[in-house]
Image 1 (cartoon, rainbow, N blue to C red):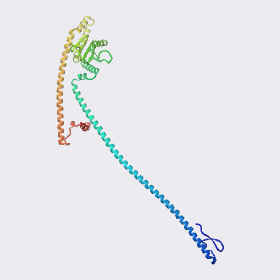
Image 2: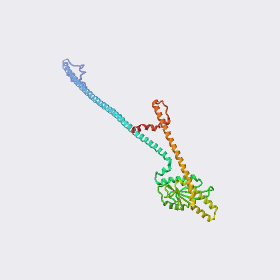
Image 3: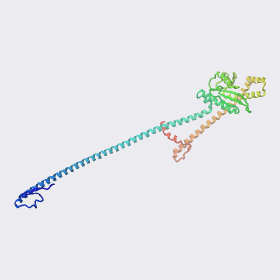
Length: 385
C-alpha cells in the first residue's frame, strides 16, 4: 500500500504523512494541518481496512474454494469407497455363488460318474457271467468237438474243419507219406497223399475229397474222377457224412471209393498197403504185362474189396470201443467235477458263516476272495437286481 501524501498549508510542499509530524509549521496553521493529518490518517486507515477486508475476503473465498474442493474430493473418495465396497460385496457374493455352483456341478459330476461306474460295473459283471457261461458251454462242447463244429457255421467252414481233421489224421498215421492240401481254386480234390515206401520209393497217389453236408450228391463222383485225372492220382476217395442210398460205411462207385470219416483211416491203411503191394509187384514183375493185368483184375475184383471192408470193419469196431471208453471217462470226469464244485461251494459257505460270526479277525482265504475288479462291481450289480 502506497504512503499518504499531504500538502503543507504554508509552503505547499508535498510531504509524507509519516514526516508531517516532524515537519516545521506555524502555530496558526497547526490546527488545519492536524485536521488534514487526521483526515489523511482516516482515509489511510479506511483504505487499509478496505484492503484488509478485500484480502480477507479473497482468502476466505480461497479457503471456501479449498474447503469445497476438499469436500468434493471427500465425497468422491466416499463414493469411490462405497463403490469399491459394493464391488467387493458383489465379488464376494459372486465367489460364493461360484463356489455353490461349483459344488453343485461337482455333486452332479460325482453322481454322473457313480451312475456310469455302476452301469459299467453291471455290464462288466454281466460280461463275466456270460464269459463263465461261455466257458462252461465250451467245456460241454469238448465231448464231441468235431460234430459240434459241423453243426455250426457255414458249409464251407465245416468242410474245411473236416479237411483239417482228415489231413492231421493222415499225417499222424503215415509219417513217411507226403500229405499236401490242394490250394483253393486248383483241381485235384482237397488233399493229395503221395505214398512212399520205407525205402522212400513213390508207390502211388491218393486223391482225397472231404464233404461235410447232410445230403449226398452224385455229381461229386464225376468231379473227383476229373480231379483224379488232372492230379494223375492212382486212387480217389470221397470222405462224407452223407453216403449214397443203400451204401455201407465203405463202397466203390464208378472207380471212386466212398466212406465216412470213422472208416476213412481204415480205408487209407488198406489202400496204402495195396499201392505198396502193387509197386512191389511192378518192381518184381517188370515187363510182365500179364501179371500186371492179374494185379489190376485183383484190385478191381470183389475179393480185394472184401478184404478192405474186413480191415475197415475191424478198425471201425476198435474205433467204437475207443469212443465208448472215452465217453465213460468223460462221464466220470463230469461227475467228479460236479462233486469238486459242490465241495468248493460248501467250503465257501462255511467260511462266510464263520466270517459273519468271528468278524475281520478270521484269516482270509485267497482262493475264496474276489479280485479287485469283482469287488468293485459287486454292490452295483446287486442294486440292479
